[in-house]
Structures are given as structure tokens and as C-alpha cells.
Image (cartoon, rainbow, N blue to C red; front, side, top):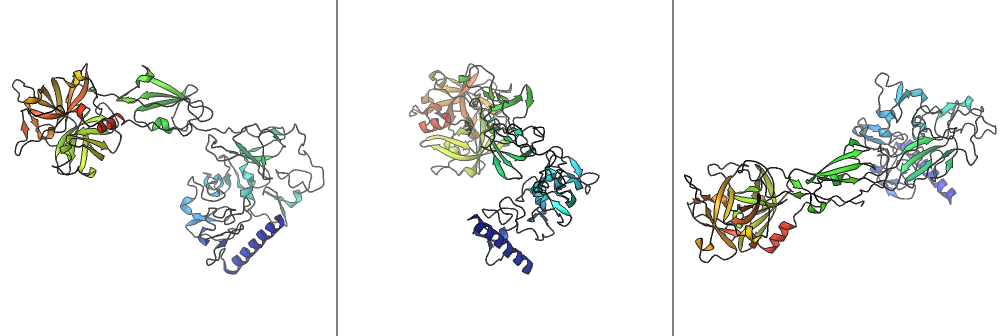
Length: 581
């Protein structure tokens, strides 16, 4: 069977060569390109740097770059040629992304330019520069990675057969050096078929050679012989291996593969690399409620690309506090373990509610403004990280449905924030505004506290923040009014337990009023330095009557619909789900 497959491959290459010689095309645009596995692809997908055939024969067959239909094609002026012949746009060359099937567009040989002699010196993959004529000469000259003798680089370079011998790895040496009892090809291919005893032969003694340590995340193969090597065994001297990481592990340097050579002293030319798995850094950086500092072996490191043994110290951001279940600790630590998993689940911090963070009492961090497209102004109160409560009539006219979300904005700390949903309270004049983003809490942005305490809810003294009476400008500073909470009969004999009755408290030499723009504002009561919301002002002034000092109705906060209470209590910053926990 293998002979038949081999014959078909040779036949297909022969046909493509004839076509290229006859009309300069590598593909018949009417019939498409025939992959060697029997499938057909569009001609536009041939020699474009991407293996569209399952066996890669549209770029180069399997891992053999010499079996490529692209070898002799010409590229347009705005394209550059991959090492095996495919054409890619010139802007893709050396852009840190692999666009050639053999990755040659990112080889340092092409991308690193010597500052003084760019034509005489070329770069190894390690960044070291060596003379150009030392590349592909059969001898490894790149001191750290041996990339000057990469088969994919060397096998396509010219090597005149009448004067030179091509090593199996692709290097080219003078024909006079073949079978001279000296290893001139680093893979010893110049002496293997000579029938002579060569100097420094490769040892085949079981205990000789280099040990490949056991690592279940290693994927290793012999580069020249192209067979897999099982970790835990030994490889002969002069063997060159390619190491890749498997199981979603990778090298710390982000290289996809590394090469090592077993030297004649039975040691690797460089220590074998370690495959690691980063811990998920997003869990530290995706939360608004926490901050993190990372350290490795006592030294501070960035909380990015977190390697095993890194310790992350998590603290609360401004405006947040530690959850009660974590006790009085100001921070907690998480360790990145060897398998790329965190030692513990990360907890979010809780918002600090109801406390002034400024000596200026007019700056109530929970009070916000609500504006509609008709320039109607109301107040509102932050009750959770992404919910504001206000009066329903502020976002709904008469008996119509609530306004669409694009007609309403919330003014928070002087900035406009969009609304993603509006949830009305039915026959109760209250509405929840779901913000389009979770708020970043600070000294000037905090939620009000919520309580079921009857003592606080029945307070006779309260406060309200509202728009300044003498301006219509957007502002982060609001006017504070002290209120008296009156018996319900002072507002209406028919007022039921859903409502409270409030009026501006009497102040000597100052006539306080409540105005149209105060509608929807939260009525708050203070206990032991903490402020709680006890009501939502529901003031609908009569025509030509914008302000009043008469008693006004407000909705009791503890009487809002249960569905709205649940929405508020469940509105928390979501925990980041760790895929690898």
C-alpha cells in the first residue's frame, strides 16, 4: 500500500511540474487544486501560507518542505516569499505572527538585521549574529540553539551536486569532505554510507547518551530521523531533538518549540526547558472590588503571566470592604500552584454603603441625577453596584409605558451613564434603573445602605439630596434638605401604609422647599453614622407650581415590590469562574 501512495505522490508532483512548465500556473482554476489525499480546494487557497489541504500538500507535503508546489512561483511586488515559496502580503513579514506554513516569515534570520553588516551577518533564533557563510555549512555555529542548521532553512538552499554534498539535515559541504573519516555534517550523514570506521563514533551503549527527564507535558521528536522520543529514556550522542509542550502547558518564553543537541560528553548543549502552565491572571484583574500585588520568591512581579509559586496578595479597592466571612483581615493570599491552578477561590469585596467619604455633606456618594430626553430632571439613589432607584413617573408619562432606555441617562459624579433596563413598580410610583455597566466605586460613588429595621424605617427625622435650586447644569454637588417625617394623615386621610409623609424641616431665617427636580430622590435616615434609605420622593407639582414647603408623599422603601427587592439584593459583582479550578 505504501508503494502505491508513494507512486501517487510522485505522479501528482510530476503533473504539477508539467503544468508549471507549460503555462506557469500551479493550479487549474477550472478544476481547483488536487490535494494528495484526494480532496480538492480552491486555487486561491494554494501557496498562501496556510495549509488548507489536510496533508498540507497545497503548501508542502507533511513536514517535507522540498515537496511543495510553491517552489518556483513568483510573488507580486507587494508580497514576500516564504522560505518554501508561498507568497504573503509584505506587511505580514516580521509582524510577530506566523503567516507562513513553515513559520519562516518570523525567522530571526530574515527579521533581525545586523546594524553594521546586514548582508554579511545573519541572526540565529537566539539573537546571536554569525557570518552568513556559516549558515547551512554542515557544522553547528549558532552557540545557543543551532538554528543555523535547521532543515527547513537549509534544505532549499542551493547545493550543486557536482561539487558539493548535501547533508541529511540540509547543510552543504564540499564533495571532497564526504567519506573522509571526519564528521563534517553535524548529523554524521557524510560518513554513514562509506563503510569506514569514523572518528568519534556515536556510542550505542545503553547507559551512554543524554537522559530525557520524565515530564508528562513533554512532546519530543528526533528532528533528523523524524520519530517521537519517549521521555524518561536516553538518546545517542549528536542527536538533535525538538521539544514542545503538551496538555496546554508552554515554555515561559512563549516559544512554541525548543531544540537541544546531545553532546559527546553525554550532556545537553543547554539544560532541558521546563513546561509550565500560567495561573489565570484574569481572576485578579477582572474585578472592580479588589486589587492585587504579586510576588515571586519575595520579589515583586507583575500580576500577568503568573508562573507557579507566585503569591497574589488580594486587598479591597477604594469603596469596598472585606466580606464578613473573611473576618477582620485586610487582605488574603492566593498561591499559583505547579499545575497552573490557584490554591484557593478568589472572593470579591463588598461595597461600603451609607457612609460619607467627604467632609462636605452636600456630596452624597449615593445620590444621582436622572434625566430624560425631554430634559426632565429627577433624583435617584444608588442601591447596588449597577441599580439606581427613582420614581416611576420620572421615566414614564401619565399611563404610558416606561420610556425606552435610550431616552434616559443617569448623572453619577458629574458623568452620564446609560441605562440598559427599566423595571417599574406597577401601581407603586417607583422604578429600578439597571445601568449599562457595573459602577466603579470610590469616595464619591457609593450605594446607600438598606435595612429591615423598624426603628430606622420609622424615624421622624430624615434627609434628602436634590438638584441645586438655582441651576440646571449637570453637577456632582447636590443640595441637602432636612425633613420632618409626619403622620400619614398630614398628606392625606386615605394614605395607606405603603407611603410616608414628609415636609422640609423649619429652619430659622431659611425657607426650605422641595421642588420638581427632587422627585425620585431617596429619603434617608442616619443611625450611628450610617445612612439608610427609607423612602423615595413622589412629588408631582401642579402646573406652574415647581416648588413647595407643604407635606409631600413618598413611597416607603420597605414597601416596594418583592421582585424589586430581590433584584437589588442579588445585584453583586459576579465571581470570575476559573476554568482550571
